[in-house]
Image (cartoon, rainbow, N blue to C red):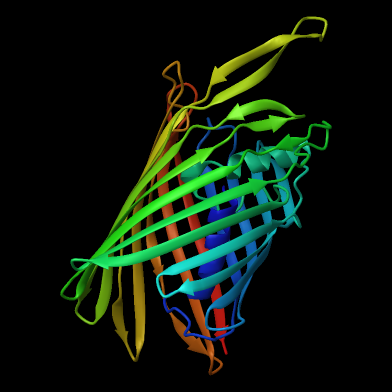
Length: 377
């Protein structure tokens, strides 16, 4: 998961449902549990992630704001009655955002290597399972070294449409991913460009966007190791009023091209005789869903959330292992407690399937429990 994406997920603690007004300090925190069980055939019987995230927003002025994020997490994978774990603090993030003009926002962020980036073999298995895109775990790596991201976004109006463009560039530092191998891993730089458009139609709003993501080659011990394929994302939302609440229909499509992975070729005596380049799988992830508001009486509301994810994954030889789908249903109930704290208890259930290496469909069941608290002052 990219550093920018993970920071955005952490910052969402601060803006769950209502954007804070100007010059407010905001503190958010909570607990987050996601767990799955799998039928036999995937190499893992269950996978779980428990997180305690904390985020802080500090307004220095009306134009300058700092966001900080940190978390403690524990991941578990069960394999044939053996439980493998990966636990500890994850990398922290800090971002400064400056509203240069009413229509231009400039940001610079840093990924601080407070997490464990060097994993044992057991920890690497946990990280591998939790990084499965379709499962959607919030954290999979715990640490990826020092990194810096700069971005700029601007917007304008034309003929009743809102138009926006944003660009970001991330540079990542070197780290050692394996406790059993002195390999020094250097992730490639990342460039993102996003175009967006929105339009109001009475009490409804339509928003759409497209993002292009490019990576330079990752290196191992200063030599090229992996060239990730370009990614292209399209997304759209339609928000409308129904009864006393706002409902939103959304969809997205993330396409990832094939990549190139270089592997060492070792002979029977254990000697390096050359390198071989293999083509990694191309992927396509489609997401669609609906969320809204239902009155419960007494001033309480329930916000249902239903979404569907489908991933296709195809190797160069036609193998589609890792393809699958997940349907999730649930919701949350926003509450005000202790006079000034916003609390958002949420629960969802998941069911779906993943394809194994032999082409069989393996069923999965899962659940999510989350409690987020926010205080603005």
